[in-house]
Image (tube, rainbow, N blue to C red; front, side, top):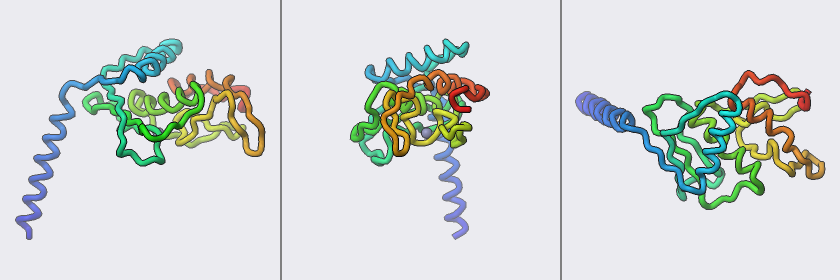
Length: 178
Ligand SMILES: [Zn+2]
């Protein structure tokens, strides 16, 4: 029994080491052409805010085994460059109805993988999410967002704040949220 446990521990160590060695190899950059514009836009929006971002470690891939609860998933919130960053996209669900929602979806995932940000469920004084890193809300600055019981509302003016906050968590509360 004891021997078996020791052997198992040994095996885990070996497997663990192999895994570490594997992830320490050169990072892979593999982004399908349909996703490259969104990655370029992420780098551009960061640059507009004085932040230079170089992305050489990123895989974006379709994953048909994903749970349909998810549109896309990032594999890590670690900034450790030896960890391969992977965004998996569910090919079965179409999650967004406009470019703004698409941007929020992928900028959120890039926030995990590239900026190392975790989920943020805090709210602004007006009740809106504080961050694009909120879980499961891609309508933050949609041209047609539906408040509870209300009609379609153009929220595109909120984009500047959400992108400011994505690249700088210290961004102050915007006037529209006071
Ligand atoms: Zn997330």
